[in-house]
Image 1 (tube, one colour):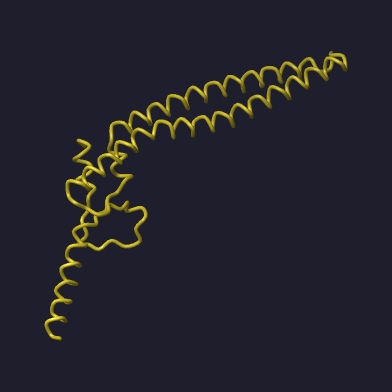
Image 2: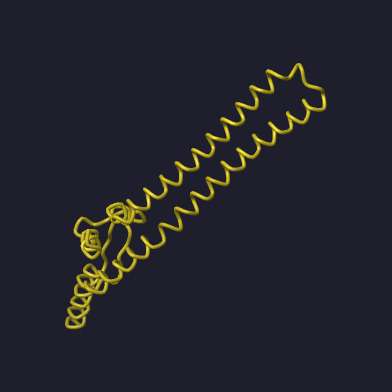
Length: 164
């Protein structure tokens, strides 16, 4: 009986030590933000956002110019022309609002599209680090509520694998 208890205790201790070495964690945000591809992605997004802002500013300037012209001419215009110009102003404002909303969606879509290769590169590096170090799991710190101070931090290993 004592031999069975000793064997069971030995197996539990061995399993516990084995399991601790097989789980690691890393900070995905830290890794992605350190990547040159992320900086390029941010530059592309800023460039596209600037182009969109310029287009919206052009639309706003046109709206303001036409509104001011309408206000100056309003008293001299026939009712038919006033109505048509008011409708033009309303349509112009609606186009600007719609463009702004569509542009916001396009920026989100572009960000997601540009992020896919970055995420895939990180995923490949994580898998390589996991295989090389025989980790059973590599968890993202964003999803962890508690991390044992003695746990393996694989962030630097992933960065090294990516050449960062």
